[in-house]
Amino acid sequence: MSRRARVGLAGWLWRLCMLLAAWLLCVTAWIVWVGERDQAAKADAIIVLGAAAYDAKPSPVFEERIRHGLDLYRQGYAPLLIFTGGYGGTGARFSESQVARRYALKQGVPEDAILIETASRTTRQNLVEARLLMDQHKLHRVIIVSDPLHMARALRLARELGIDALASSTPSTRFRSFHTSWKFLVQEIYFFHRDMFPSANGS
Image (cartoon, rainbow, N blue to C red; front, side, top):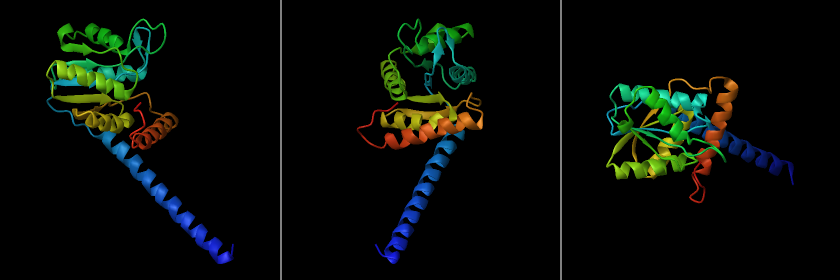
């Protein structure tokens, strides 16, 4: 290969790298922007997406989601809470949604204001099961509660499923440090690209 050809190839590779970097920067900015918006408005229900639970206790991430869902409920944004999340592992006594329900009941939320599903294990499944509950109870508009960096994917999946959804991210989260936030953001960038392909299963 001649020197001129090598220089030309290097130039094209450099341009490709710059385009890739610009694309990733745009995707990152979009994920952060969606997570920072609070669209909370009157709705039929509040969907709290599942997260890890330790036996009968929610993980710090899940507790923040539950607490934010309860805050929205108490502020009168919706009369119903939908907690999602199945059993985290073999031998688990409670599903994630059952843990959330117990937490809400202890906080004084009436039993008839809570709906749960116990079958889901992923974000997409959370929303599929929530959609079934919405159909059963003739609910139309919902507010989705999750972590800020998770919200862009959650909203995209909700819209794919035909759910009329508003976003309200948790105001605080365990992903506070740069290290944990960066890892979570990289994960969401990966899921963004994976979900672009029809054959990929949502997580």
